[in-house]
Image 1 (spheres, rainbow over the protein chains, first blue to last red):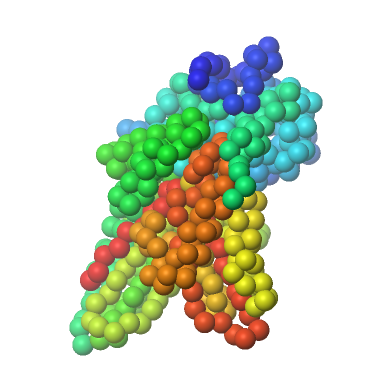
Image 2: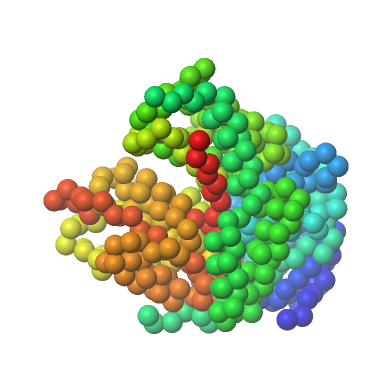
Length: 185
Length: 281
């Protein structure tokens, strides 16, 4: 299976070429946000408060790492379950987020929003956290430090392995995979 | 009577928290290797390869297998001829979790007051502690870091007695199907059948401590485990939910007698990061 190199922030033209099931290597800048940070981002958007970073075109990684040992960039750093972010996602895509990385499938509303706003959802392998940490070259807390592991981090990643799960054409890796391999027992 | 100091319990719990988070059991690793041989999906095999490589890195570098270092579930089997001195037992266990998680650079994933403030306690306390009094003069300490993603997909159902075996199979298969890729398959499916609502779930959790793929010694229960495993693996969910034949590595069921009115069935899902370590004092 061919690997597609993706630079983050992801170019709008590249989004058109990404299809569910494509294996990708992501390099560039991504931002972590999980449950508690999503809630705060949404509250900030609703109140019209200043956001901790400009969302336009950016990539969110649903991840809260384990602490770094002295001399390490980050601890273990695999994706968390994306569906818990589903209720917030259409609002964030409307505000400019273009790519997301997590694990597990998304709601019909999120898939529709991915089509509408020309975005992409990547999945990494949940639980491969020590391995995935190897592709994180720099990590810095940029907001909500009080949330501990749920703070927003700006990460520099290099060849972070993921797979396109939902594309702008409405295709879904999880549905495709299941259909292909399910059988009558 | 045999005396065991609370401080030794603290030390042992701290050590087990780290060991469990850094080292996957050989039973789990060999189940991954076997699944990689039989898995038909290319992406599925790739996931299994990543998991084996992940386990290698984690052990070698003392890095957590998963960034979700779990809620610390601690099982204590306390011999009735043992008395604990120099401190309170539960406080000693909690202190062990605190030391283990902070000194091992393990993620604190526990929030106080779960429905409102949700402030991270930072040291992963408090743990969940289950104690059992058994004959003898030893203490067995088991630490199981249980991740949130798989735990969230757990289910307790009070079936009707007439639902019988087919009712159980249908329920478990539907639970795994609904969970999809979220609980990080390949899974170990823990089942607790019988007893009462709370005991059924505890049986399901304890079933996860069994060596992966070791069948229940009761042949009828073992047949049920095999049947459920076959049906779960026919769902097509596969490793990480990317599609494939390996949705579960094993189904472990524990069974107890039930009330004439009841057939409680608890499903507790374990992600592939099936972490638990134990020591007998």
